[in-house]
Length: 416
Ligand code: ATP
Ligand code: MG
Image (cartoon, rainbow, N blue to C red):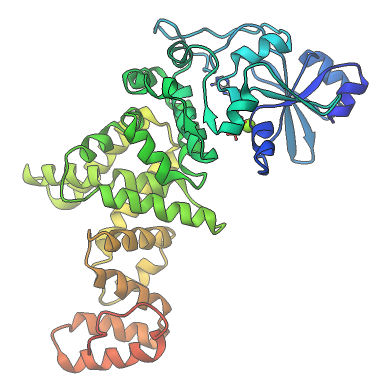
């Protein structure tokens, strides 16, 4: 499709992440194309084209359900913000001015993101020393870092994201202002921060990204409540729990398994919800409403920073609420719980808690065994746990557990 633009007499380049990733021998996530053709001219070249965007008009060229984004060279610098107006000095307002490649390059963020691959002669066009930085593995902002961060504070998050993803180091001048400027992120609309949150934490490098964001004082801009409780220095929790959640999630990405943002959000906010619920219980509010009120308040606070969709809040509440039900292992309740649409997520959450000492391992083990047990053995388990004190029944259950679960985790009664 680049050739179609060329044939029509326009310049066309691949730019940004795809050039950077291709030079590393990695498969790019997507391809961004820039051209000197205006959106209307692009539309005349491609029939399968849709123009999008109010802020800056872009063309999407469709190939079935997939599309490639084609932008026209931009003139002046342009902060990548929504329509919202900002009062911070230094933050640029939007503009729609088209320009040349020489102008376009300076509005890009990092030198390694400003390489253009010219299809005319298969050369890489480099105005900023991006090739050299790319070879050296350095993330460096184009121009004065403080000015560039002020123009668009999200660049601070992007700096961390790319450094981790590419295994590059952040140039000293780009590191230095981060702590001081972190609070500028409060001016960024929560919808945009949600998009960034997904890229930061669901790409398979969440643990390292989280550690680096904490290191530079940026994490608090995304999760102020969590950051506060992390700074409290309580015997390992929630630090270990959150780190484990990220570690598990990264492992899932590496194994090609799906990861859900609400699970990570639930893990991040779990400690805050528990702490707030405890306060409410101390004030005389009964446990269940205290938990529910705490969940609502914490979600309400967090969604102001990161605008996750409503259904995710509901899913998080389910996962939290189901934790208490894992302690009910008698009668028909376990059979009901196991059919709950959010059982799987809640069970994974339980495993994580058990791993980090937030709940007894034997509770998690019981549910692991219960899931793989067959009908009659399941019934035996729910009876056995209702008669935990009875040695006779206990022996009976262990026997039935032994023959079916030997491959899985040890069950509660393994010591028998
Ligand atoms: P990836 O798609 O792998 O996350 P990318 O570098 O392609 O990385 P995009 O967000 O797709 O990132 O942006 C494409 C290009 O647009 C970037 O490489 C950069 O040149 C430019 N760009 C994107 N966001 C900004 C920004 N906030 N400030 C300046 N330039 C930006
Ligand atoms: Mg991209």
